[in-house]
Length: 605
Image (cartoon, rainbow, N blue to C red):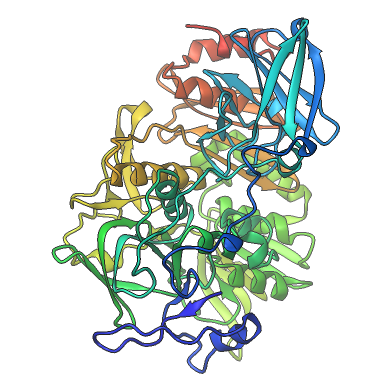
């Protein structure tokens, strides 16, 4: 059930009649095609939420019929520090032995379903081998990101040297657990022009902030506003799978926001922030007062500045609509992609099967060069060339030419002319912070919002998180950095929420990111800016390798392909506070034809 804000009169805020779902679709595309922010919110009273609106969560005390119990192994079958998947008839469980104690948890990472048995067990938690999420083995709780859900924890008992696990069948099939959350009990929610917490931006940082507040028992009003037409979605998937529909990308269903009283204003643009009166003004004149504010506006794609840039069929990819349109127009046509960074290369990989031709234009001499170095970049470039992608390197676009306003050719500075029916621009992004210029909230020279370790800005009660911030990176001597990764946004959203509740939490996660191209995944952990050497173990030709990025005698980042779980191992070592020395890696490469990584988890150098 959704409500819609109409154009407000100067003082009061009116709620329109709620239309049935079918009708709303038409209504949203009203004459202007815009309309005021739409609110997805609770039921009519917006005071308490009825029990039938609650999301299905496994009952904390399942009935005996719902439970299954079995002996899964002998006590001596597992060594300390070992993990094993065991079958309970209704599903699998991850059995962990740590410090002589057994723990049983869900066996799949709730983020993308990675088998946790292939992950890394360290310091009382298991880290996902694919994207680095961490779960506490005693509680199943998510302790580091990405993802939103935790693991189920199952009962373990030892009888006559046998290990028994008892689990709810429902939990075994769900494989994910949403933490218990408070509900909104604010009597004026949905009607008043003030909110306790306002979150600008509904990406990972904004959503995790809202969820963390509810998990920590906060029951006052929370309003999330976004420029998007959609509820929070998995944006990194857009460039990897261009024809995915918005509903498939949703991070949480509409019922979730309703059940926990998290209001989402869509197509809502904040134009000014008045920190003195704690008030924001939206583009349509609607004003909203707040007590605490989180700024998580993300970034806007850079656009080309050359002649013909406003031609039809020239795209940046920011929304599901952009991505869907590109794939629709690219079928059987010639596509030119400007920029060989993550977005450009993911789009190129996805379109090779569908387009007639795919060409990539890039200023550097190899793709990903600044990020992954020359050798890894070249190996990946070869993989693309083997998949019919043509590269125009060390050049840029000087003009886009068309016929009747429709793109036909891309002219390069090297004076080469490339046929193009569709052009996708992936040349980076700028912080979407223009609306803060006159606000008194500090911005640096590049438009980023500087925050401290607690994600606080220079204004008390105003926090910031996600792609638009620079923050001190704990394990790189608190160097102020901007890291526009999905996983970082999650972590920053949580820290901001904890500090809104005066919990004095600090940012200390190790950056982790991934990309997928032609069915192969590249994983990366650390912060490699300024690396002065790359040590490679494995085979670049075969795309089975691990690359260690070093600065001086220290490893500052690692990337791998087909070499799991080494990136998660390195991330875990860095997270524990231990430095990895260049000489350790050199010895590993020298002596290790087996790929043995025990040196990494060994204590001390």
